[in-house]
Length: 159
Image (tube, rainbow, N blue to C red; front, side, top):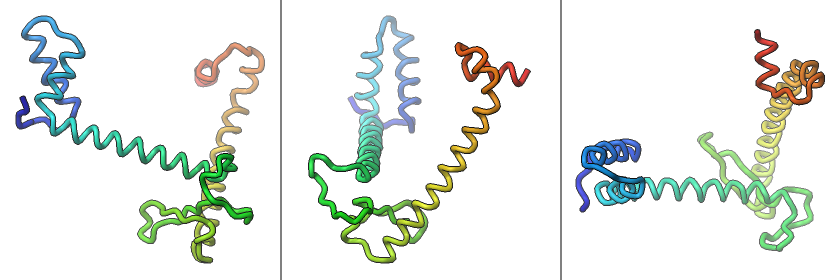
């Protein structure tokens, strides 16, 4: 039975159903799932769509990042340009990127893609520098005791 839901999240739906089931005796996780699906079907469908969209987006981003790696299966056409097969170009409004195959990119898109790679390089270099600085801070302790964890070394240094 589907009812109009007064909850706006799966967490709230689970809490509501679990609290009700607790009042009526024995139940298990499958009972909670079944009741939430039946009583909050619109919310569940929305959450399923949201999770599917996030999964698809994650896979698409992974696939696009892997375009810099040789495509051994030949699934993506490539030119011998020394460029990635797809160029990430910032959207005009600054919200996200669009991608274009290198062979279809205009000069402005190639330039924007290069600029984005430069920004990424600067960020990566800053992150690497911070990582190396922190490694140098814990190095004397961790090299002296190879079983010491990073967390333990920080506790010793901060105490």
